[in-house]
Image 1 (cartoon, rainbow, N blue to C red):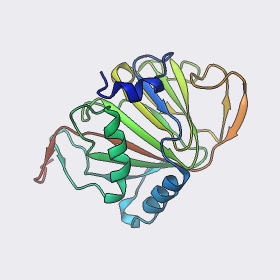
Image 2 (image 1 turned 90 degrees about the vertical axis):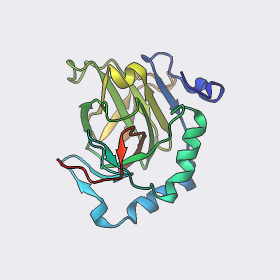
Image 3 (image 1 turned 180 degrees about the vertical axis):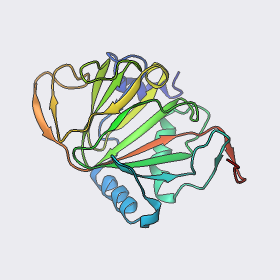
Image 4 (image 1 turned 90 degrees about the horizontal axis):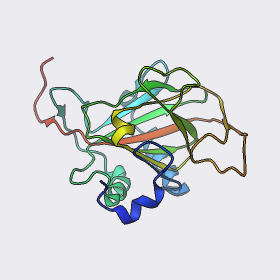
Length: 218
């Protein structure tokens, strides 16, 4: 259970399987601009280009034998401290941040984050909204969603319990999203509104329990 229950429970998505918290406007516009400036001023070699997105790893590269821990950059401290104060990581502290950049039309296949991490994900979104879909692992085709949530710009999404361990999550590659009434956190007063995606940068904040200060032999 969450340590700081009083602050976090009002953000619980009660219609979702356990457990999803959705906090709108977790960061301000100024903080969003500051984060994007820091991310995009990072030297080009820090980026890893994949077929459907590009990313930065901060804190080290997770590995089954242990992550060689690296100090997180100071410009992340404010946001990490704010998440720690929510109590979602209980007695551990985040030590890894994965930054993903998705241009309009890009997404990510349904996946588990897996056993390398403490079973909590906290994700800050910058630049654009998206839709995050959840599936049973053997039913990941479009239309078989267990549920979907609207992830707005500057929001924080926290996944725990079954939503971390039992269901996979992913983002369908689209250039626009229709905000239908079956999306868990959409107001019924604005059904079927269509929103165009733009470039979204997500910061996925996690704790890697197994770390090492030594080189890992593969």
